[in-house]
Length: 186
Image 1: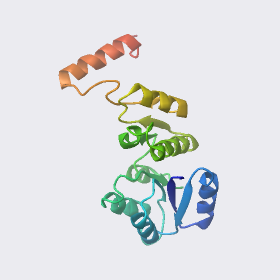
Image 2: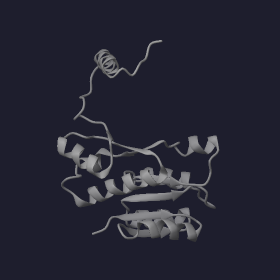
Image 3: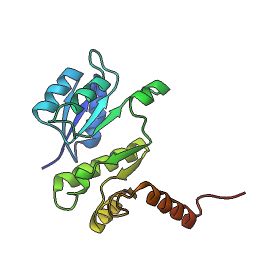
Image 4: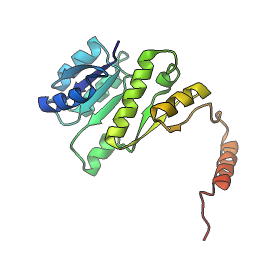
């Protein structure tokens, strides 16, 4: 069964373009405004939401706020899709230079096909947006290998290092910097 991607945009042509790109791999649902997006998302929570920022009545920021405050949709990843590019909008829209894949998907990447499909979708979106993707919550070698095969080359989690107190973290970072020659002296 294909994962469901909800595309929310008040311009039908934008829905057609995004839907056309994704329809072979994903089941697409669409909404043309914020109120309709809430109805669709709450009645059948999607696996991923592509959300326009600029919409009449209820903009994408408000839709996202409401989605994240509802238990049925709070964990659904949201990617803002917008033509706006001024500094205020970047801050308000969670300026993106990377997408993160939530650990809840990583933990089931090798056992639950739906999780694998969501991970693939996020990696595909990161490539199309020209941003890097980082997987959170990597705990096992097989998870890391699956991510590498899918094109995700940045990851974090217990597989790499357990949580540590401040002083130990500082020493760990110093050792990493020393070994990688990241800091150049002049």
